[in-house]
Length: 72
Image (cartoon, rainbow, N blue to C red; front, side):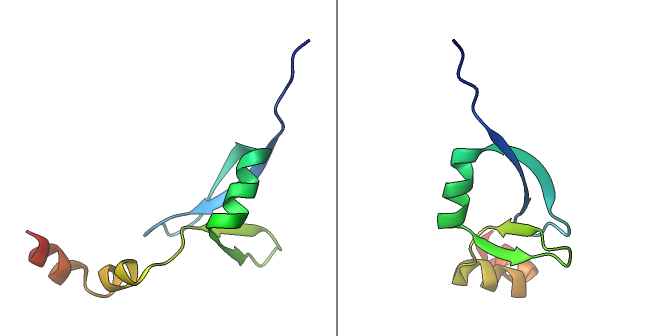
């Protein structure tokens, strides 16, 4: 007998993405997202999972050209 893993559709948004993307993930991945990502509610009540912000990410978003030039 086969065991089928349940999937759920979630919306993810990473980095400089303007809009979240909708993907299907295993139900077990939802627990990981709940523990390790930031969440935001869309106007329609949908939960959007985002990569957690770090001080480094914030610094890069404030000065992308300067930080890129410094790294080169």
